Amino acid sequence: MTKCGKRMGDIMSSKPLDVVAKYKKQNRRRWKIILLFASMLVFAFMASLWLGSAPLSLAEVTKTILGFGNELAERIVWYIRMPRAVAAILSGAGLAVAGAAMQSLLRNPLGSPFTLGLSQAAAFGAALAIVCFGAGSLHSSATDAVLLDSAWMTSFFAFLSSLIAAVALVLIARLKGSNPETLILAGVALSTLFAAGVTGLQYLASDVEIASIIFWTFGDVGRVTWGELLPMAFVVLFSLSYFTLRSWSLNAVDSGDETAISLGVNPSRLRVEGMLVASLATATVVALVGIIGFIGLIVPHMVRRILGGDERFVLPASALGGALLLLVADLAARNLASPLIVPVGVLTSFLGAPLFLYLVVRRKRLW
Image 1 (spheres, rainbow, N blue to C red):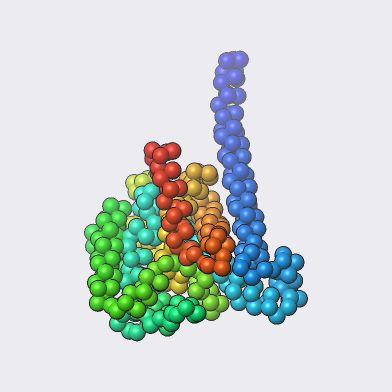
Image 2: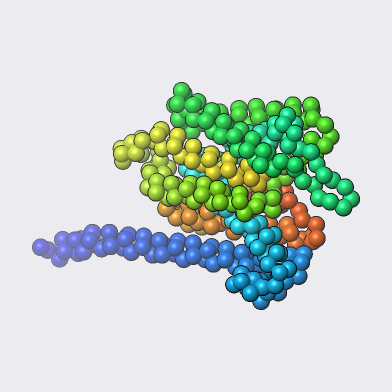
């Protein structure tokens, strides 16, 4: 072999090694960022148990978690702050994972749990329970809080209505083909339909029932109890596990339906199954905590800007990022105007809209 041929052979053999080394280095960087997200989430969780209108020291919180706290600290930590923090983590993770999956399945940067009308459907179900089934009488005076009479009935109707919207989307996809354009247009139509239904119910409702509807749509993780956290945890973990196991297929769909088919992936079937799972997670979260905007839209975009588009890393990072963002937002909502607690859904919308506009300005293409 000539010197020139030997040199060319060395170059050709070294290039794949360089590519593999860069790929492994990039993956190590991604895992470090995911671990950083997890560490920040643990820190934010402890801060949410520590900070609040009732003064508790970090030592008291630690003793209470270990089972050595006094009665007052146990009530505050275990029955007020702990379920609120866990609900924020599960809700943020569920919405962010559903948003990341929908953006990938629809190949659209605006894909989110709220783009397809699922939140509007849940709001319609809650309004229906309040106006037609008496779930919305309020106890409001100068001294007591505003409470729904039947939170379980309201949550059930919100969940059922959101699932009906998801099934309608799947049926439309089956009839007209599960291409992204069909699903997005169907979602816009369903969103308009359910929003009109909420407006109609408000027109027929009394002033107390209107107040109940508005109270439910605020979005607040503080209304979730320990008994409601178990089904939420099961659904969120199931959806995260499902999409993580199908991450390779999602990467194939990101490259286009033709490429996915050539790799042995059925994009139509994956799109229908994925939309059902994402809709189930969204329906469960929205039914229990109300409407919390922008978590499912903004978090996947932020994660993709940091980690790239590989769904194997985007999905777990989105879950951690969504949990962290909602937990920090709830912590701020509880302490900015203490003892007044601002609904976290209002705060996430205020924060999410400018941040999304910033991403649009800084990057012409979001996908």
